[in-house]
Length: 360
Image (cartoon, rainbow, N blue to C red; front, side, top):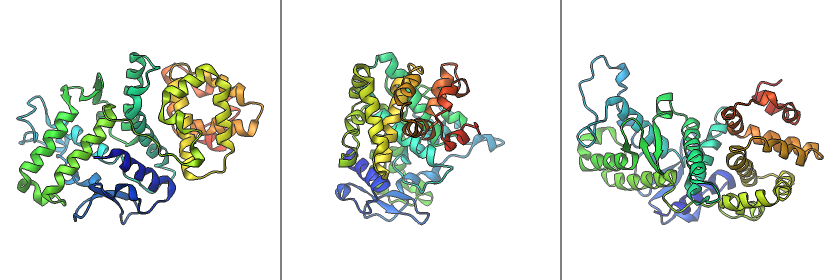
């Protein structure tokens, strides 16, 4: 399955207004616009439910609302350590993974979470290639990105805390069950006993296998075990892409010449806006947060000092760094700091940033 071509289509539809991208004509899935104006992946030439929703009706009942559960988990024989709560959490994860490439209409309430989830997925895909971080730093970033990916979906608190990495393999922490093993066996069970579940499924039996393949491919990128995804090249973003598609180059440049990095931020802030450029500009700012501020929040002062002579541009860059996501707020909290302790930073917030952080 060519995930890069699928990802190119996702970016093209979401940020470049492409209606019928050619890249996935050979792919088993195709994007279609739904009645609620979302754009979802469907199995090509098959009548049925969107990939993101095919397993929704199979969601186990919440055991917390059952007075006396009498059934066992679906895969109890394969995973005897699994209880009903664990099964429900793993199903939430399946639905979360399967919505990674869904495209939703955005509003003030979902915009930030939508952006954060997509960002974290892209970064997890390429994290193993960031060799200028130590193994310990990569592990720290990997766990943090997974947390933010789940948080942004959003999932409930139990699911948010339920998964971790063993080396780079995603596991259900309490049971030590490999998520890949579970997802593989889950799809196999549905496919092999399709007639038992047919009344709750809106996809044909031959659609389960490609759904399984895509889920496992998405999981491979969450684990960083597949070829890293790349943002597609377009003229308006070509000068940023080397630092977005290869974080090593960003770290090398920042360590060698910080002013050159800030010069690119200034250029990006000056460019005529379009959706894809704005997306890549946001990615660059959040890479700065993820790979630099995570380990040294004091670098925020370096950024302010580098931009302060251009107050309008400084306000734009600093505000976007804080408005697009809550990453920096979390980073400061992890280091025992708060935004309120940085008046020299707050001085460059625009009205939107001040409102978001309760500073008005």
